[in-house]
Image (cartoon, rainbow over all chains, first blue to last red):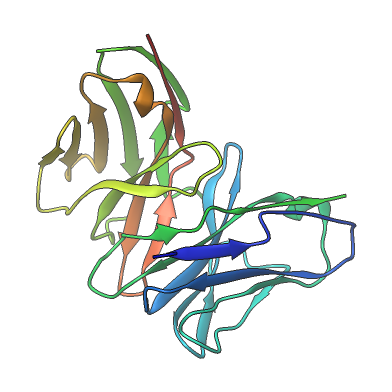
Length: 113
Length: 112
């Protein structure tokens, strides 16, 4: 059982480049979300989705784009990378009826030069 | 603005001791209070959680104490072990959209 799979695990970008962080879950969870983790800031919600075709902004959405075409996949797109987006990104999923019980991937470490 | 304030940011405890991490919140519109544990290089994982109508929940060596009137909750790790060394996050869950807000985290080191 793979759970939540994130790719790539590491990525280095130059300022202005774009890229997509991939997230896939095989648990048939309705809810998926993206967080970024920075020292001293905890985990901050970027975007979330309550089902295929439905997404919404979290606490820090600027500079990121998401879509949810299937239940399984929830990619995060960086449109024009900036050094402030250097962070560790986590994708998480959960199912209805299990409040607050997020299942996280192992993270994607992104460095923007 | 930070919806949940977590302290301390780092904690060193001797093996066998009690580790205590505290969190405080302001908004009352939360219905679930989970704690997450994160080891280096891994994603956070749910450790234990409590509902606001319960004052204490214990699972093994881990206990959550919840004070609704003071808007505070804490994690106690009894008989702390080196394997408990990790970062711990308190969190708040609100509403039906699975929006979970995290504290800044506490890095716990248990020394032999």
